[in-house]
Image 1 (cartoon, rainbow, N blue to C red):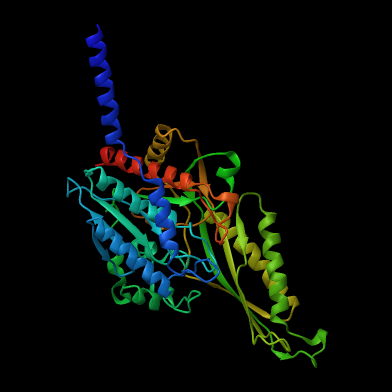
Image 2: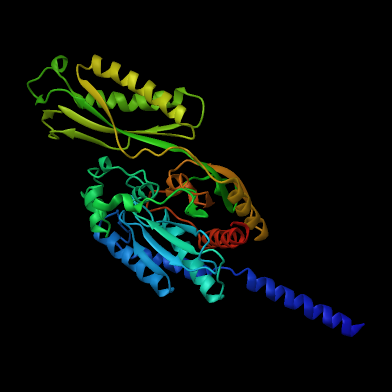
Length: 431
């Protein structure tokens, strides 16, 4: 009886050890250290990091990622759009790759976690698989997309949606998208070669900070993303007449900036007049000639509208456009709406992948909730060519695109473990 008990105990111990071997977990401390290491690229004297796409800091950080992937034994290439693609062989080379990753470029005056958590978690997944001598059946790909913040450039190119009309658009570095692609090792003359055929990937997964406060406010660990909102951008150009600020009477002015100010207020009012969760934002404005003693003759202001429905975006746009044209007429200036080639259509994530993310969270004892993404992501464009899934982890205070952006090491590790488990589950499930 005792011998049977010992035998059963030994069997159970072996089963537990076997299970643990089959279900490895990431190194939380190492993952956080990678975040800190990445933040060194572009580190400023005030302790904050600046790393806008195409900057010297961005190029240095990309090279560090490339060297890290090569150190894992992966084959690494940079495609015509500047996407970094690290490939890890699987047992069956005929199977389509399971891909995962995010971006490492940042908005001006941004934080260390947006995009970076998903990218560093992707590196940590590969490191964990290597340490545990696990070879998946499917090949694996780590993809680090360039210039996500300036128009999801790399993922759009991979989905075949980046046209030449996007090349002149410049970011905060002053480099245009076309110039930036060449700076980071891409080739604008071969941009079509970056496009991948629909169905060429078995799945794509992206771990990301929520960039909102829902998970933290509800005390939840994981967000299972159901879909990503679409977004449209415009330049709204007001043209008046530049004249002397001291000699031109108030009632005789054609002040482009005054009209633009009324437009900004109107955007907020119109967006709030619709039922739903749509948002509209003016985040950039430039007045010319830009002198305190000259009435602005020209103003270029931005417009961004987001929603899960393209139809809603169009309705809100038309309402804003109509109201703005009325403002321009009453202000004796002209206005033109110029659409920018940065449009992203709403995208739903794959139900099968959603369920695997949920199952992984459950297996790890993590709380979760299904939720939409109000921010755009590289997964949005990749969804046009592959089944995608997204995993959210909490953002402290709901803060993002700010130096105060923060996600704890524990939350990052939770997300990375869900990512790892989901990849292993999909490896068994997908053909």
